[in-house]
Length: 179
Image 1 (cartoon, one colour):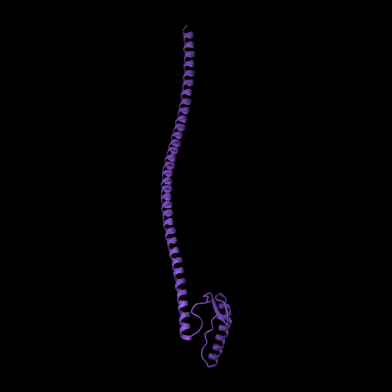
Image 2 (tube, helix red, strand yellow; image 1 turned 45 degrees about the vertical axis):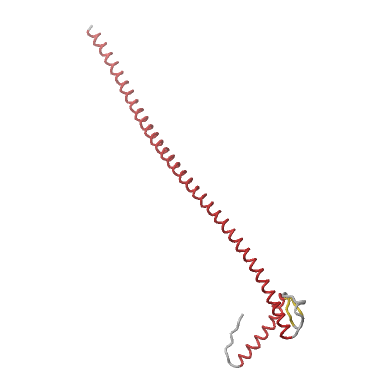
């Protein structure tokens, strides 16, 4: 009986050792799994924190962009008002310029008529009023449009200038040549 008990105790011990080994292996596996789970949880927390920080950055950037947009809108509005004021001032200046031009033209006509009347009195010439036109001038005994006078007189003035330059050069003086 003792042998039987010893065999039984030996079997029980072997079973206990086997169960203990299985339990130790299971505990080791669970420890490894728990460590892996902790690492994964830590990584997930880290990623969550990064995502949270990224969201905070995005929120801050959005606020900054909104502020810049508002400032831009204010500047645009201010510029638009300034442009409107400048346009109104420009319109006023142009109206005043037109008025001054008309006044100058009227004064020029009065002065022209005055000169004609004085020429009549001083030289006993043509009638005091008549077919005079400020837009014409006399060239070689005939009336030509004033706009054409520059083209007609320029060759003559150039020829006279050239002759004067040649005469001065002959006298030994320095001549300034103009293009």
